[in-house]
Length: 320
Ligand code: UDP
Ligand code: MG
Image (tube, rainbow, N blue to C red):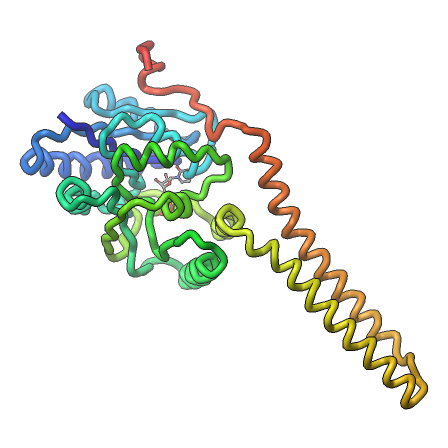
């Protein structure tokens, strides 16, 4: 028998979990006929939910022993949830998907076929539309993907979801990247492996609400850029060079003016403007350096990526 682990990060998903479970069990039935040698385990990662999410997972586990869970001591974010899920999964194949059914479980057989029969290491999904999303959010998302792909050598696919099936080898290589500031979309691109892309139309959340505010997404975007590109750092250098060239031309201009007309100085207001502009640019560049420094600082503390308060095994007093 081979094992397929379904990893599901959940943060306050009490409304969505019952729907999710119903759908995934249907897919499991489908697998039973096509690939009877494949067993399933469901690994829910409760990311410090404040609602009944954990209770619900435990309730499901009392009926279905193929359900396991890891429960965090507080909210650590989806990236930490994914990492914990991959770490605890025991499968030969591992799929990560959202609890809100925005990653349609019906695609799973097609994804699985890609790695089982077509020789891929991974099958990933990408949504080709963003219908149902606020237009402003879609706009900024597009800008972000354009920008990061210009700045980074690692390919980051527009519209890629974290809905992806992988072989054990690929998961182990993801786990070998222990960085604290995790940007999974970049990590997938960085490690490589043969990936089949499967496209689908955006599906709206089945229940509950999105956990990502615009502000949170913006911060996430900045984090992604910093984690996978050092291009902003060279912006500072370029600003410096351009400014120096401009200053040099102006010096020549003023000397020339003095020699021809004899009036080297005129107007303090232009001077003030220049000082403000240059110091503004300096502050901006220092800010960029500060961003990298702060990430380096956090990285150097080597804190764990998440803290598990409980897992299905420890809660029941079993060996992990
Ligand atoms: N999620 C999580 N921790 C968080 C935020 C979200 O584990 O801090 C989970 C959430 O429960 C869901 C998935 O990540 O399963 C995607 O979140 P959401 O649907 O809110 O994001 P969206 O689809 O709107 O981008
Ligand atoms: Mg969602």
